[in-house]
Image 1 (cartoon, rainbow, N blue to C red):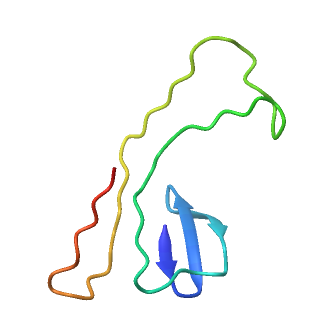
Image 2 (cartoon, rainbow, N blue to C red):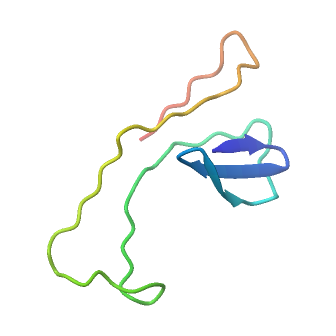
Length: 77
């Protein structure tokens, strides 16, 4: 994901998959939440089985451009 004052771009495996064209304020911060959302069939087909569903992520990388020598810590959760 790349955040800027006039863009929020999402990447998966290096490929751009979403652009919002709106951006965020320069002092905006957030906590990253990685999850698997399953639809009941209203938005896209429901899973074809009642078996448990799981997912895993090999890694998640977050890069922040350094603007200050000592950035403010962000505490999540």
